[in-house]
Length: 171
Image (cartoon, rainbow, N blue to C red):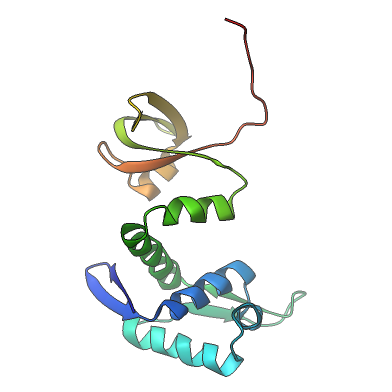
């Protein structure tokens, strides 16, 4: 059983329910998620009903027809549940989020730190981060992202570095 806090409400779900949401999010399909997890479609539907009952809303939305023969996508509630799950897992399993990031992105250079200073602009903002190794990194992000992520001084953050080029200079 995994306990998550969602907007002040405590929700307890079996880990498999969160894994179902994760697989639906990845595949945009309940059927594909079922195949990946080795469960029946009926089981998945029952789990989704359980999530809906406990969370107080639909975690997924199905879109029928079209060229792709329909899709199933996470609702805003489904995304919030998955985010709360990742957050809860990171507390109990050190390295969980870092491993998840490495799994989902092609980046392996992941640093941790705390936000030191934020300079907010109209369109872009600069975030200064103190690395745990006592160095400073600055990141330029959109102001929309800054607000969406609710980044402020003191927040713990991951810095994910991805470079197509690495320059060297002899000392």
